[in-house]
Image (cartoon, rainbow, N blue to C red; front, top):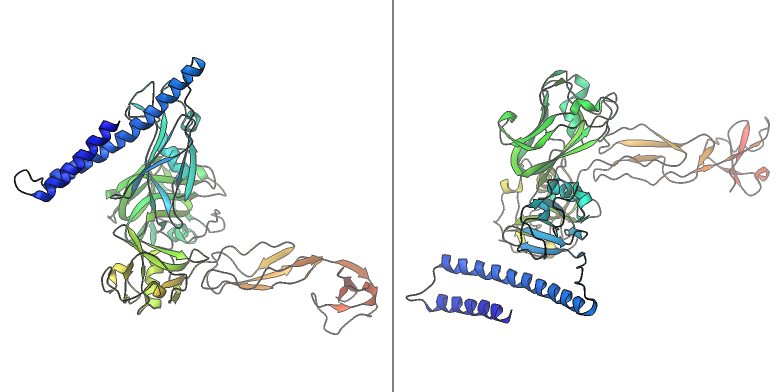
Length: 534
């Protein structure tokens, strides 16, 4: 082991010396690069050999003590080998019952590029006594994508039953995954869509409106006329690198109509000319199911289409999400639609200076992130001070551009700012469904809940308003005004027809004091007085 390490050191010194001295025998850049790669490979082999020696030592010690070789325990640790040039990382867990754990920093999610449960190398850091190099569970990639893709972190046990069976009995296996941590978002939201045909209430825009209702009867979904191989298509506006497409099936009926569909991604408006993302979905989908189609490799394109193949049916689904890697993100906000603006350049995230930063610049960023527009532009590091480079300064958008790349700026890395001037924004967002409250009813509003939408609450019969807000309005920032209505159960104290506690214009929810209710509040409603059990 010592001699191998000494050889590596000697080669490194020799290479450096020849590069510096010049003259006859000088290495070319290509030769030096080749030697550097070989040194890296040798270093990895040294680490692997070290692990094997340690395991062999453990086994010999066990034989000395017990007469039996040690059974190597399943390794629970996950080993990660990053590759900076491509941002691709490789992680592996040794042992047939080890657990592979993957994670990304806040704001980034996992993109699974390749996976193998089995053994494809006899010269791997995970040792083996019974070795093969052709062992691979066919479901390796699909299992890892289902468990991890789009998540910030995940854990998968390297057990044969997780992968549909043992691909090579008696062979020491490992789970190995290649992945990247990316900034990913739904780029299809509220983008223009078309379909082969459709009755008026069930147009193609229903599939990208951001609402996840699953009822065709309630006009929440796309519903084409019955045609041979019906289709739907969305125009993303610009080219994105698409990783996966999620399709929400109709929930109130007829989910099988989506069987045998294909997803295509590409630059051509004629979607038949674009490449297919993943495999044709041939299973019979359940009502209301979410079906995720993973592209074999990330695909670049502006148009995404869904088409039923070989059947004459009504094409029906309720929401389509197209997930793509984006070079822009929001950091530091309390909600997903707000934060400090950061852009990815030269494989490094950096901020934007707030010089000339205004609502037009914010509009462009919000549309890049899938929102309709911006609610507010923020300056002076309103969402905290960033780190790393300041990539852009003096950004000047008209507000109609599809990308910051189309706006004027001083060039990447050229600025006269500090991080106390980091730019931020709040995007206009749809409000979530209004809260369902105990003993209360809601009226006067309906999804999708956009800016200005007002919902009215009332307490159910037998309950009175004991705090909170009767009306809630959706703000442009995607939050509801007011506070939750509190409804408290009341009991009735019957007073016949006598008006003994009428405070004048007493109405439901208006309270007075009454000696008939002890120290409790009461409310006069005509022929009854309600004691509120205070």
